[in-house]
Amino acid sequence: MSEHPGERGAQGPVKLIGVRESALSVDEVFRAVGDAAAGGIALFVGTVRNHDGGADVDALGYSSHPSAEAEMRRIAEKVVADYPVRALAAVHRVGELAVGDIAVVVAVACPHRAEAFEACRRLIDDLKHEVPIWKHQRFSDGTEEWVGA
Image 1 (cartoon, one colour):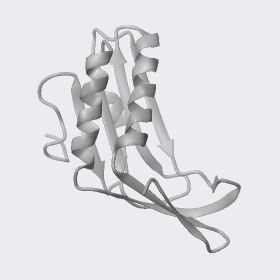
Image 2: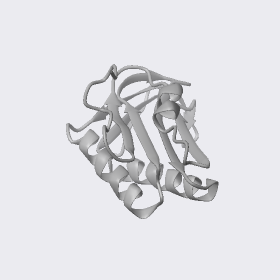
Image 3: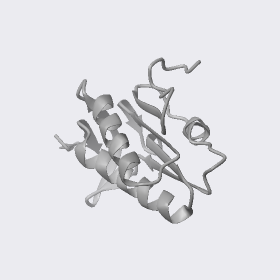
Image 4: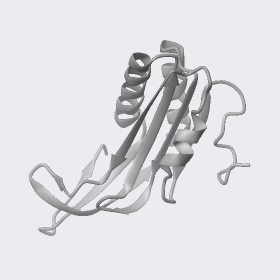
């Protein structure tokens, strides 16, 4: 049983969707998309970088709308409809993160590598632009900025 009830898709290619306050596991996402019929698995890991727009980032926090997980699932289902996806997983972290922490992990398994790369890129790009998750960056000079709000 999953440590996060309700996140695993029992049927179909969408195997794992989640918005979590706890640390994310690349291994968990990779295992979720394992499929013997897949010839390629593309995995993307987004981390907190130490700079943005020429300013040094000390830390940041992510917050989300209650609909964020449902929106992630909607986007995942669209990717599944548009590509020959065998398995798909996506998790995003919310709460306070430090430089180097993992903020998002997505993975897609397809019959061939080119399809897996394309589907994975579409998945992360659409998640970033459409899911109501906002980033509050705090800079070394004492300033701060909201991104995506």
